[in-house]
Image (cartoon, rainbow, N blue to C red):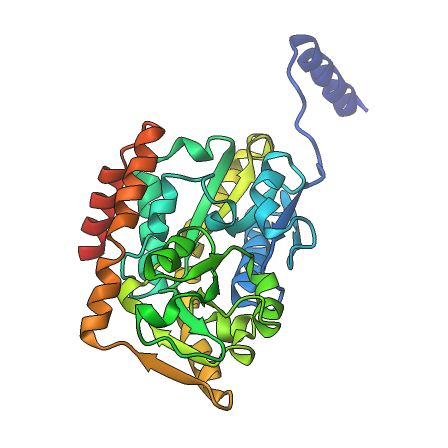
Length: 337
């Protein structure tokens, strides 16, 4: 009884002094995570694994409800959904809101990427180097990016820029500029809408990484894959958290989330490369599908046609007071490494 009285007295003193007693058995912080990838896609599976690992390492201080397949917010609405806290966490592509991320969109330029690991590393390096203001309204967790985007067409093979003229190609963000520079007509749409659009002839194909052939079953509706790695671009994906939600997290949970995010960067990059290989195999397994290889002279023409995209990028950055030239130079330097 005496010990109990002393404990009560001590608590009363703390309250008088304005000190809060530590919560015993406090409920975990509950967060929601929105992602447009279907639950079966490897990038969606990695996102869900990230959730479970954060929960584990936070010691149960955080519980994350995962919503794949655009069930909470659609791909193009995901970022604003995080800002407005429709979801606490979100993953989507920069290119789905063209012009919203002028500095980091430089990563999506046709840098002649060789792999997803390379593109993912570059995306995070550019953000770390320049920390563009375009992400000031969220807490950035990390970025990842797919391997080289490749031209795929239905019904007609593309062996030259002339073949592409008049063709409508599904493309978003900077990939739309790639198609325009090559003489085609880009049509913006998210990946979930692309299968039926190609199948119904609304568009004549798409430009996307080879993993999409299996991950989104696109190989079922296209016939030709043009090896366009000479103008290999990427699409950068963000994983961001609502700023207020981040600020409200316990320090241990913030540390756990930061550490897991850092570890997940190479996992996403490698997963893109592994699924690119599977996508290529799945494409070739479809009856009648074929790969078109550009000859060296034509590949050089395609590369040269990309020059205006870099000039345009630097000009757009300049309008916003950002040094696009410095970003491009940094990217080329990182690519050489």
